[in-house]
Length: 344
Length: 219
Image (cartoon, rainbow over all chains, first blue to last red; front, side, top):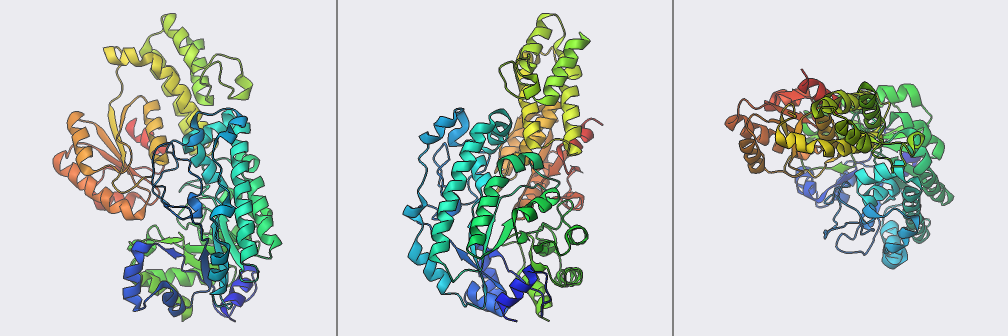
């Protein structure tokens, strides 16, 4: 099997020659130690070395200073550099003081066609060996952006006190992503196999918002985003950090092919529990705890955990750290143990 | 008196802030925590009775329901908002000393970490349990923590971290606090934190959720 065959078979819960895997997205601060440890010159080389199956493609979005589609909306009420991870969701947002649905026109909504680079999208996708599972990293986090639009605490209260306002804002954000994604899918047609989209719905101990409210306000947009990706023949990996056990069935019904990242230590998200309830109903990606095991555990502990996961899920699981971002506190030796075990 | 206290507690439990508030829909047009607290004070109900028998009672029910996953963050935020509307009327009594809170609690997200929703939920719960909370915000340096403890002798301290990469800063903060103020109790929380980590870094208590912190403080 090549990488793509293995990925697709895993998604379909069909037999594989070896477990499928994904390194995730090492953040720049984590890269030097990884490159040094594996004696490689780039993350591309590292992926080849560890025999990784998924190749992520970031969206080229020319909107400074972040140049990141996850920062496409300038919702910050105060001056902010707007780099990913540097503005909290609870910081005051543009719509904090607005109550009237008509007021959503007061925001300067971006047009993705001005910023999303079609040629570069195609170049990036085309450059990747077609034997990989080529996955667009689109995020399309319409719920998180809606939280950011008001400030998270305000947004969660607006869901209760002024549901029309929240719905209008999240719908407008969803429309933005549908347009952006269409541009990306058209530009990369024939060179893309999967997409990663999603929002964080969970905390360590449970959902942040009750399933009924997610269903009412959020999942309509999720369904549109998933349907759009599927209309291009793409597999959909849906991301949500945290304990999301009560909505996994919803995500399956919405059409998600892969649930990511199965945050192993979050309540109800341990692999045996997921196996018990969702065996062969969906594919999972993740499972190797990045809160304790990969950070503080020894390589032999990582190796044992990977063996346990593979025994539990001979297919139907893309083995990966339980957080997409590989942070610098993960010793490269543990990454080596993870992939070394899979490749043995 | 008991009827109005019960009504205020109900408003806090279900997040009815004031008469104009559209939430919850089944209480539309009714007085909220704001109006009822004013009415109670005007009719001679002691402020400390309102605090203990209405606000703390209401927030206690909220905390329990949150722990049991019967309500979620949006509902808890509405309850905290209703409680705060009532607290506004009690502020003069806190200032005059007529109403005493249970103590002071300094809360912060540790240096390098900008995540605050968990910290804020703990803050609301502790305030709702009758404590005065001094919120230092996010990305808080050790020096700022130590200065706050100096200004508030005997205060308990709550530290939060969401990122594994900032757990080291939590360890440093606990060490600095314990070295200078060994008798001040330090509580920790946050997604990657657990009781093993608490033991390793010498903190006094770990709770996985806001209600756990409140239960510990109420002991």
